[in-house]
Image (tube, rainbow, N blue to C red):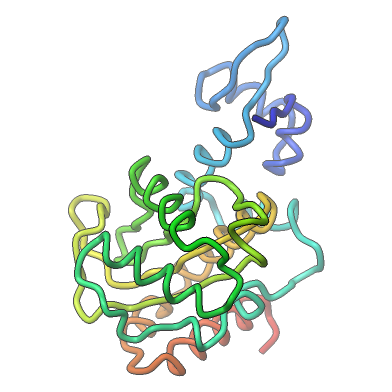
Length: 233
C-alpha cells in the first residue's frame, strides 16, 4: 500500500503542511506515526477525501483540481463521457441492478476488459458507504485505481432511472441520477470527483438532468454545464 509523508500529503491535498499536521494530530486525518513521523496510506486518504468533497468550498475544489491537473481548464467529462455511454432511462429498479447496468453501459466503450472485476469493485465501494448525495445523484466508483487487466482507459458513464430508488442516500433520500467513474490513477479519479461535485452545485444542473428525455439531451446538458463552469461559453 502506497504511503505519503506529511509534505507529500499536503501537496496531494493542495493544503498547507501546518494545516495537514493539525488535522493529523486531532485524529481527523487517517494516519499513523512511524518513528515519530506521520505516514498516510493513499487509499485511506482517498476514501477520507471522497466522503468530504461535498463539504469543500468552490475554491477548495478548484485547488484540488489544480493539484492534479494536466492542462489548465481541461474538460474532463466531455473527454471521458460520450452519448453512447448515457442511458435515459437506465433499465434498473434496485441498487444492485443499477450498478450492474452501469457497468454494462460502460462496457460499450470496449475499454472495460473485466466487467465482473469492475462490478465487484464498485459494490465494495458502496458497502464502505453510499456514494449517493442528498440531491438524488450518486457517483459509484472503485475504491482504488483499476489495473491494466481490468480497464483500458478512464471513462465515465451516466444513467437516469425512470423512478428514484433507495441507494443509501442521506436521511433516506432517494436517487435517480448516476455517474459511474472508472479511473486508472488517483489524479484522474480525484479530479473527476471534484468536477462532478462542482457541477452538482450549479443552479439548475440536477433539475435539468432530471428533466432530460433522451441520452442526447442528458449528454448535451452535462457537456454544456462543464463548458460554462470552465468559462468557455
